[in-house]
Figure 1 (cartoon, one colour):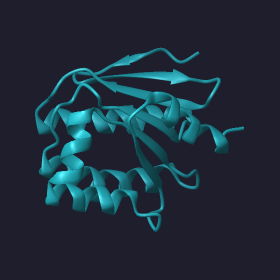
Figure 2 (tube, rainbow, N blue to C red):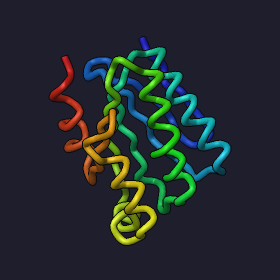
Figure 3 (cartoon, rainbow, N blue to C red):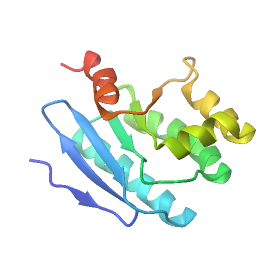
Figure 4 (tube, helix red, strand yellow):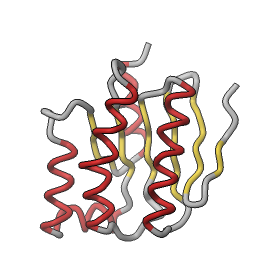
Length: 142
């Protein structure tokens, strides 16, 4: 059985029935904390074998360009290498504020476009509702 993991900025829970790791942000955090929490997420994914992730960022009201750049160009490529040969699939559940920022901020648009490009060795999609996110993750399960 997988116990929840409480981190400074988020909580990780597991849905073994769906083979999905659910990560819910509960607060904003400094960049160093964010990086450490991402490392813990990757360690949890390796330990559990779950490469389908639901990232619930609805409690975040802003996205920093520096963090988006690090996640898209450093974290995800490193996670792909560590989780290989399994494919990383990430459904990102956004707040309306983040969705608006991703649509209107040119720098954030660049990082979102990079991360969601189908040519990447991982799959990322953005969602406004949890049901749609889980449905997107589910077809490749089992």
